Image (cartoon, rainbow, N blue to C red; front, side):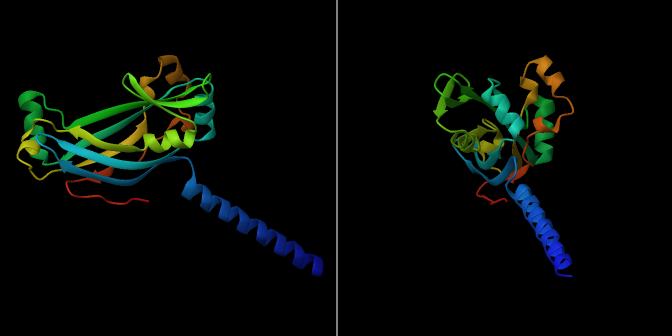
Length: 200
């Protein structure tokens, strides 16, 4: 009877440990989680700011360590006013979207991670530092020269951050088709002037 009780207790402890591990994996697992986003008016543009928590899974970490550069893109979409966006698209090729691209790489000789924006880059000694920098964007200019920016019109939009496999070589894109390890993106986060919402 005592051995049966001990066995039941061990099974119960194992199940509880598994549930705690699963909960921790969901809460702190790899991926991109939105933490905050906001917008403000400048002289003739709207400036966005956002913060994301970025974590790589082992597949992406290994690829990075073996010389694969990972392209990430911030995406913005105007969601209000819809009529304005539609009219401007037809009238003068206005795009209600914007993108800002980064590239994360590892430099084996210096043993540093590099975060590239165009021809400029910043170096970091650890991957966590590089991912922390990748997850923050400030003063990103969108909707420049539009009546929304000029007149400080009411507007709303959404922003997200994702790994952009379309920027990788075609053979590499084909080899990662259907592999969930290579899908990494945040949900869309709403942004509006004067708004800064915390997200879990």
